[in-house]
Each structure stands twice: as structure tokens, then as C-alpha cells.
Amino acid sequence: MRLLLPLLFLAAPLAAQDIPAVGTDATLDVATWNIERFGETGGPPDQAQFDNTLAIIQAAEIDLWALQEMNDEDDFEALVEALGDGWEGEWRRGGPLGYGFIYKTDVINPLLDLTILDEFSFAFASRPPLLLLANVMLPDTTVRGLHFIDIHAKCCSDQESYDRRLDASEALKDYLDEEILADGDKAIVLGDLNDELRSSITPGEVSPYQNFRDDGENYRFLTEVLDLANVPTFCSNQSCTSGSTLDHILITRDVESDYVMGSMSRFDEVLTEITNYTSTTSDHVPVYARFDFAPVVSNEDETVPTVFALRAPFPNPFREATTLTYDLPTAADVRLDIFDALGRRVATLDEGLRPTGTHEVTFAPARLVPGLYLVRLTAGEQTATRRLVRVL
Image (cartoon, rainbow, N blue to C red; front, side, top):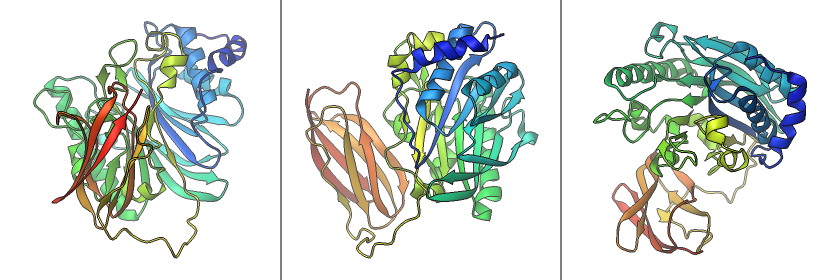
């Protein structure tokens, strides 16, 4: 499509006025977003999609976006230009689809960008992962040599597509094991992985990313909480209340201590502030997370938990969201569930191998009726429970 850029600068601020900033100046904020068939004839309305995309990126204050389905290079470059000084981008074509990064240059200082695992191009649907190696410059520190990887996996629920995702996942983990972890480096993987985590969208199959979940000592899906709560990132209806959790953020464990607990979220405001978002802009909702790399100030009073505990939820009672905190004196396989008054499980908020320390999980149910609930934490053979009340 061909765009009249001068008109965009007039239109974009109107669309952006109620989209909140979800990033901060002191932290690294990253997001992944499949912008459905961006720049492609037959996709969402061309000018509206461009204007809305520009408005969201301008308002969100995200430092780095991993983007998928950026199918027209000219329009990708026009988007970067429309963002103005202080923004740059890296773009690649994979078959008919494009993908790439857009980032703030005062935060992200690129050292290298290239596709990796090209020998597994077929498994990755002819769009091998794009690696951006960069220094991250924050007010209190500089993080050197952080690896960002953008992935758009093979789509669809048929068996052949599943097998290709499985091969791609195995190749990716081998690469991360041998090229990132072995060297003591850190990585953040973002993208449309086109599958869920607890099970596959392919009937009868386990998730093709179970290999990462099984290696909880080295990897963590920040987006697993969305998957556990059945929060879709791919929308099958206008309000995005149904669909699949396909868009994910995966980190190596060395980054976990820098992750701001509870910051990973689906960018729900785009659904409410962009008119007819799923038909004008994208059938995927962005997912973002925050990292705080500020140097840790030593505190002699800080100690590793010595007792297994599930702390009292706060706030409790709650209306929209509450925080659940638990302590692990040793690493353990955990499961954090919510049950209703009849003993029925209504949500699983955390699941998998978790390291020693204090862990926080935000519970923000969209469709939970007011009433009494039970929180149950299981860690190995230990169990703890708390009462939780939701009010109008």
C-alpha cells in the first residue's frame, strides 16, 4: 500500500489519546505483536491499520517491539519514519511474510542483527528466527550483549504444521543451550509461536514447547500465566474473549531476577481504545513485559526464605486484581490454583519448576463472579491454602 505520511501525523494523535503508556524510563520494556498482514492488500483497512499501529507504538512507551506479519518492507520503513527521530527498525522477509524489530535508539544499541537457524528454515515456515544482539542503556546501568530473538512459527493445527513447530522448537532450544547459556549470556525470545503451552492446538498432541517447560532450571515462559488462565492473544471474536494463547515471551533463567514480577500482560487497552480493533488493526493483541536491571543495593536484612509459605493475598477482598505471594526455601515444582466454594478449579495461576525465593503472581480475573474462593499452593509434597473473596 502507499501512504500519505503527512496525513498520518495529523490523524495518529487522535487515535492515541486514550492508549496508556505501559513502559517506564527506568526499565527495559519489550513487547511482541503480530500485526495481521500489515501492508498487504486484503488485510485490515490499510490506512486505518497504519494509523492505529503508529498510535499504539507511540503511546505505549515500549522500548523494543518484536513484530510479525509486517509483510510490506516499504510500509515497515514508513512506520519507522513516522515514529520519528529516536526509532529504528530491522526487517526480514520470510516467504510471503515479513517480520522484524522496532526499537528506541536511546535504549537499544544494536551490535548485530542476523537470522539464525537458517538450516531449519522449513521447520520455521521459511522465516528463521531474527536475532538482535544489543547493549541496553538504562539510566542506572548498561546491560551488555542481551540477545533478543523474534520468531513467527508455522501456523495451523494440522499434523504436518505441528511436526514443523516441534522440529523448530527443538532446534531453538539446542541453539539457546549451546550458543547462549553455554557462554553465560542472556536471551529474551518474543513472537507468535502459533501454539499453546499446556497442550497443543493440534488435537491429541502435547505442546511443541514442552521441552522448554521441562527445563525449568534454565527457561521460563512469562506468558504461561496467560495460557493457564485461558487468556487469548489470538482473537476469534471482536472482543477477544475467545481464541488461543499463541503469542509468547520466553526468557533464559539468568534474566528472571531482572523481570519485574507481575508486569507481563496482554495489552487489553488496545481493544477498548481502538474502535473495532480486531477488524481494523489485528487479530492478535500485543503482549508486553518489564525488566529492571538497576544494580542491586546490598541489604544485610534480606534473606532467602527459610520456610515454605503462601502469604495472605493483597488486597483481600478485591474487585479487579489481587497479588498472591509465596516463599520457597528450595527450588520446587509448584502449582497455584484457585477453587470456588464448590471445590471446582476455576484457574491455575502458576505451574512448573520455580527457584528458591519469593514469587509474586497477579490474579486479575475477567469473568469471575463475586464470592468466596480458595487459593491452594502445592510445592512438591507441601501444600498451603488461603481464603480469597471477590466483591463487586
